[in-house]
Image (cartoon, rainbow, N blue to C red; front, top):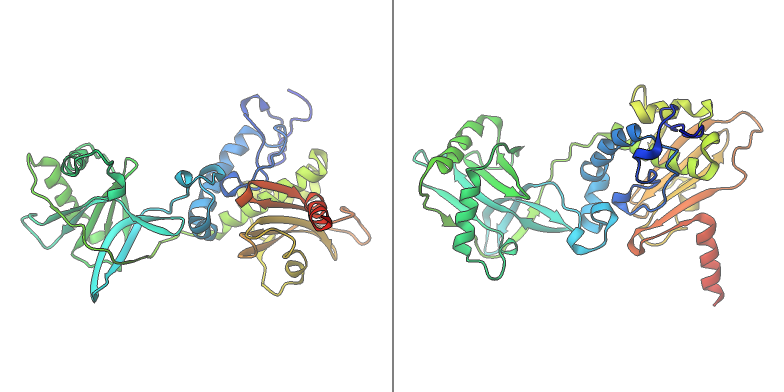
Length: 370
């Protein structure tokens, strides 16, 4: 193990042989490309952070924009890799009857709603004769027999071992939705009190030798979706701070970032212990945001680090200035200079390009010169 293999988060020696590559500065899931050297972040820390980063990309306020704009899995722009929202309850209003609503399980992908294959239970039906099905036409291949697909869907319930419960108080109390996507099952009900009733319907399907079903697909309608985001600002803030911290490490090196002056933010990012005295949301009229907020391509992510008064501060923004945050990295003593100039990283994820601030300014200069 080389002497410089010290993790910048745990400050412990580690073996980087387990790592395929270094940690991304801006998360790969939102289009980031530049990475730290493998020696900077240990396998242990990498594994720990992956859970926090999953929350950031799937459940934070950032995830809502990502569902509409992208990128998809691991930063892919291919439509087949587009990021899906969590499965949730969607409501559609009949175009000819404003008082008529249809509820279904589905997800958003690049801002478009898609229903999943599902059963619809009327919980008031004690004989369980009123089980409707709804199949997503997109999931049925051209040469498939829809009736066979339906039978296969019914058969798949018998192999179901567990499900994800979705509670939505906006649903009618007598309605339950039970659907499947990518081998995961979802049950949506109005409240916990209705779960046992819904389970009776599921068991009825599982135990029946034959089930009479009706296809409940209806005409087109206007769909709306209301997502339940379990937004944890503490986790989101720590992931935001980690990206800025990683960028400072990339710019200034491992020895610089291991200095004890950064232990306070380092420990908070890694353990979450203590108060968040580091990350804050930036208002639109913030002078720092106004100064740097016009330097990037449309809808890009960016990180800038500079000295302001007696603090070393990072500014990080996602999808243009849709979400911007300041990150206090350390205090400075009077007259101290840690950075001679502003350093920056611009992630133009739509074009799969990433620039340092100097690279981007140089490109702008050259393009204006032609």
